[in-house]
Image (cartoon, rainbow, N blue to C red; front, side, top):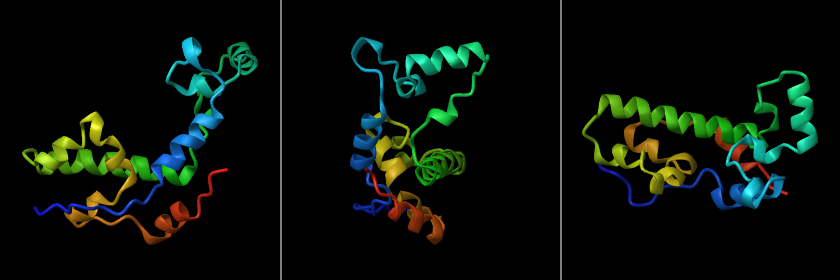
Length: 128
């Protein structure tokens, strides 16, 4: 399959990472690189008191972005099963290509489209 040299960015990943950094409450030695980074100590105490284990409500990632991340990751895994020798798909599993995988329209090279109404949602996200 022919791969494009240039993909269209559907998520402004740089703005997204700046937004996510602004939502963190843990830094330095306290940083966990998990959802705990977005939860205050008081909230952790409350979670423990209530035996809550689901931290998804603390994920500040906008729903439209979560959905595209999931779509891109599932699509890459599904296509890799169909085309196990595809070097481009294999490269999407490497850390250096994660941003390309989740923020661009690379899947269109395989005849797969992301719904237009979902693209519009992504375009309407404003990071404050």
